[in-house]
Image (cartoon, rainbow, N blue to C red):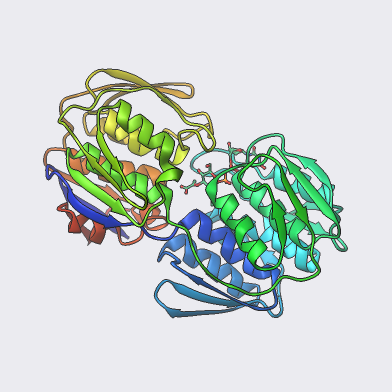
Length: 421
Ligand code: EPU
C-alpha cells in the first residue's frame, strides 16, 4: 500500500497534457467483444480500472496485446467464458459493461451484482430491464445475474432514470440485435456519443447518441477498427481546479473544452480567469475565490465527478455556499476528511453547506473513492504544512501519472510506502 505525501503552499504553474478518458475507454474496450476482428485503441490511460477490465477480457478468453504504452490490440475471435466474477466486479463496478456485448454476441452472461459501493447503492436494474425488453431472461442466482437469450430483438425502451453505463450497455446489446431498437431518456454524456461513434465506424448504425433518444439498427456483424480515445474531461477539470485552489496559473492541453462548459461557467462565477482555446484551457486566480452554490446533475449539468474537488475549492471560498449532490445518494465521504484539515462543512441530506475558511492545515487523511482522493490531494496542495493521503489505490483507478503531472507544474508531492492500512 502507498500514500501520497504533499507539502502544500506552492502555486501551481505550467501546462498539463490530458490523458485518454477512463470512462470512454472502459466501454470501448468492452465494445471490442462485439467483433471477431482485431480492434486497436490508442490513448488508453495507464490506470488500475483499465487493468481490471483487461483482466476481465482475458478471463473471457479474449486476446490482448499492449504493444506499446497507451495502445491496446484486442481480438475477440472466440469468447470462451461468459462470467464477470465477483472479485472483479466488486473492485470496479464498470465491469458490468461486458453484459451488453456478451448478450449481443453470445446470448449468455453471468455477471456478479455490483452490490453497494462507497458512493451509494448503485443498482443495475435499468440495464436488466432493457435487456429483458430485448427478449433476454434474467435470473438472479448466488449474487450473479444470469442473462440468457436467443438473438436479442430490437425494442422500444424508456429508461426510468439517467444512467451512463446503462445506456452504453444497451447500445452495445442493440448493435448486434435483430431489428431496430429505440432507447429513450438516454444519458447524453460525451462518453456515450464516443461509443456510438466507434460502433458506427465498426459498421454499426447508432443514431442520436448525445441526445436523449437513440435509434440503433442491429447488424449481423461489426468490423475491427483503429481508434484514439477522447480526452478525459474529468481529469482536465481536476487540474483546472488544482490550479484554482493553489491560486496558480495552469493550462490543460489536449482537452475538449466543450465537454467542460458547466464547470467553466462555475469557475468563471467564482472569479477565476479562464482563457479557452480550441484544445486547451488556461486558468488563473486573482487571489479570491467566491463561494458559489452548485447542484450536480447528469451531463451537461455540473458533473458529480467534480463535486468533491469543487468542495475542496469552496472550503477556501470567501463566504458560504451550498453543494447539492443530485446524482448519487452517498457521495460526501470526503467531508469528514476535509474537516480534519480545517474545512467547515455541514451535511444535511444531499446538501453540504461549506463555510469558507482562510486556510487549511496539512493532516493525515484517508481517500474513500476516486474523486474524493483527488479532492484530498487538492486540499493538501493548498494547505499549510504536510498532508498524507492514505489508501491511494483509489486514486490510481482514475488519474494517470498524477504525481508526475503535478510535480511538473510545481507541486511538492511524492508517493511513499505506507505502514497505515
Ligand atoms: N442507477 C439506478 N439503476 C441503474 C443504473 C443507475 O438506480 O440501473 C442510479 C445510480 O445508483 C445513480 C444514478 O442512477 O444514483 C446514476 O448512475 P449511472 O448509472 O449513470 O452511473 P454509472 O454509469 O455507474 C458513470 C461513471 C461514473 C459517474 C456516473 C455519473 C463510468 C464507468 N462511470 O457511472 O464515474 O460518476 O456515470 O456521471 O462511466 C468516476 O469516474 O469516478 C465515476 C464514478
